[in-house]
Image (cartoon, rainbow, N blue to C red; front, side, top):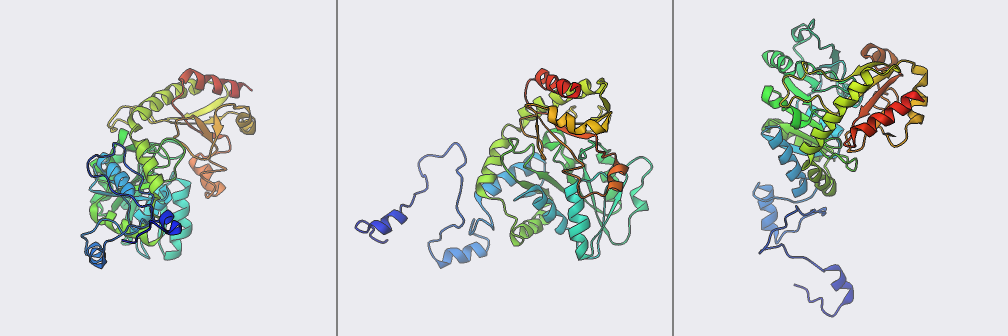
Length: 385
């Protein structure tokens, strides 16, 4: 070891640290490092032989692994991988399954970002997307081709909050030999675990309820080990790895997921009830007890969408809000609102938006943990104004 006692410049650089040996940190440390040090070339070779733990944070980091393993456990999955965003996790999941020339079936209410990824980006590789209405009159078999590889759907759709019969649709897809990927962001594993019904992959935008505090951008993909292993390679090769600090923050937020979801779901139910009887509102989108009967817990999620009766007053409504903020995201502890036409579903054509009911007067509301009477009072004032 270099003797740094007499040279100030070297001593300031090599301050060093020693791993704790006698005690254990109660909170997971943040491994805020880009690389990991090795004692010699033999240790490097052991890493590449599968005997080592970490080399370079893009390839893997303890904070990334902690988060991915936690979500995999909650979702009853074999394995998991974290990514720099929800879209990064979706991309890794899609590319772990699809090849040029493949055909994808998806719900016509698919999230705008997912639609843009499939329709605009992956189409350049010859991957074709077909969006279908998932209602009682639809049979997947009528849409399956020899090239159909994947069926993609959402537990609770964004922004119209439709809940399809997930077990039934997954069963149909598996009977047809399709791989099934489910976006469970809006429900979270607190409400339902799609893998229990046969889904192969489940994806989350950890930016939303998993993190829960509007201070991280993160994605997590969990599912069958072989698919997740391939997805993990894609995350590394495409440079979509999650930073250690973001992973640490998301894992910290995860610890309060149950209590946050319980409060937010209960608040959302009261908000939906209030909006359903308001004269300024023409329609409320909120899952029913019947639609969510397959959920682990009989709650309907923490999102409420509604359409103003007079669409021309949509700008007035947003301006009239005070402490409820407009934000193009969701699921923080604070109540917020968004406008799907101008944010999440900009990638849709006007024809597509109208076909799915995403109109100019549609408001998407993420209900927080505040006192529900205060939320209702704020909405009442803004709708009145």
